Amino acid sequence: MDVRILGAHNCEARGQRLVSLLIDGILALDAGGLTSSLSLPEQEKVRAVLLTHHHFDHTRDLVTLGANGAVFMTPVEVYALRHTFEIVIPCLLDGRMYADFSKWPSEEKPFIQPKVIEPFERLDISGYEVLPVPVKHAVPSVGYQVSSKRSGASLFYTGDTGPGLKECWRRISPQLLIIEVSGINKFQDFLRSVGHLSARLLKEELVQFHQIKGYLPRVLVTHIPPYFQREVEQEIQEVRQELEATIDIGYEDMQIVL
Image (cartoon, rainbow, N blue to C red; front, side, top):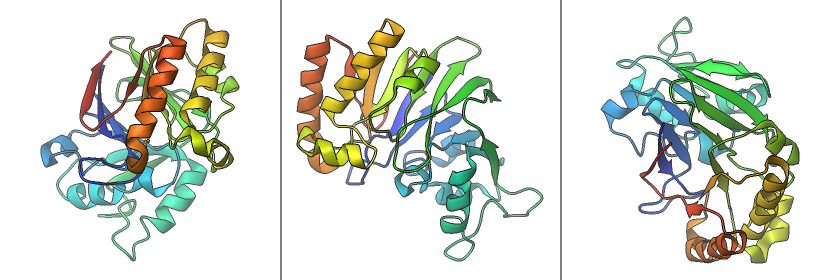
């Protein structure tokens, strides 16, 4: 399983893109920085997109994916909670600001093909077993455990989440955990209130993961605010040392092979 970090941040600046990941060139997790990271031939290979929730930094490039591909590319399946589609389609794919690619070029065969998912319902998508598991965010959200049927490799991507992942940890057993840190420890109480993690809150969740599962997977941190990049890196370094764990900072175009 080849995992490519397309975007590792929650805001954009030069060299820092909105969050999105790509597995084996065909399966995308979130779409914040999807098309801004890929050439047109690379976009043509994308067969499915898994959305964690509706927020703009996780969905924006659905519009440009549709604009690039609606006429010339194979339709793309997009998987999400019903609540996510209830916001993404009328607000992002509204047909007024730009075309609604969930109905264009035709309602019979749109480029973006919405597929409603249910938490804990296992899915077979493009040769992967996918398990959506609810996480703790300010809006209805799921993370995804993705397992390759060919190699058996697996990862879990939380998308945006705050603390309180005990039940989530019981459901998953990944080799790689891709999780967020959206601010510095100084703002921990605020981050908790809006469903995000600081490094210190991440440490608490990882300790709980180890208590429940008996191991810690490799951890990759994304959704980092560009303004606090250095501070987040320093605070994650402290957690890495305290837990004696493999915790890396995600960055644009980073590739990991599982």
